[in-house]
Length: 106
Length: 116
Image 1 (cartoon, each protein chain N blue to C red):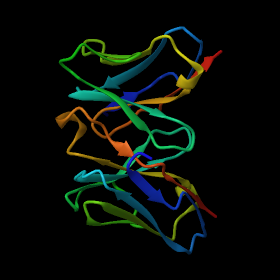
Image 2: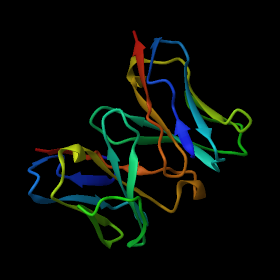
Image 3: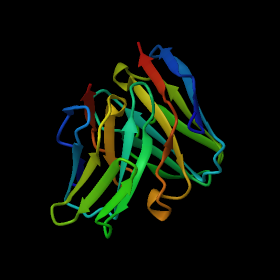
Image 4: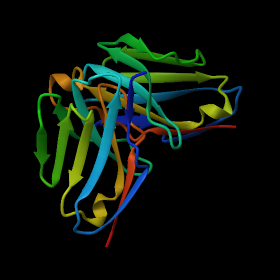
């Protein structure tokens, strides 16, 4: 069956480091992948969308890559800050991964 | 505020009650969605409306009944729910599908539903 998965439930890093989150898909080829941020008790907030023919996309301290060979998207936050602590979700068209909870420690 | 407003924010209901969740957007979007988010599980798509017409029903039990009177409003009518239906119910909207325009979904803050 088609799956979109975020295998890391949680990631803890030190402030100032780069956070890297992974999203894998199996048994299909999504035309694009989306990344969202979700804070506790709130709905997800859209961050970036990357298409299968785009290798990389950036927005301020955020960078997303799409590797069709590895069937994977990576989401990077550079110079991370405690305010970046949240759950990050990847999604294809309408299907979401379970999310990775990022904690940035001062 | 994201532009998508959901009411109520919290709802406690008995298994024999009937209640409704409301979602409103004034972003000019043509598509609206209901998602269910349970603890430690991915968001589950429930219903999709495009220009007021239901285009997707993701095998949702009939105790959940959606209504979309116009492109700005979406309701989820609830009756005879089970305790396992307790979850965060999220409404979202978009202008077409995200891949058409590089913009994703705009979500509301959700309704935290507890069925007792």
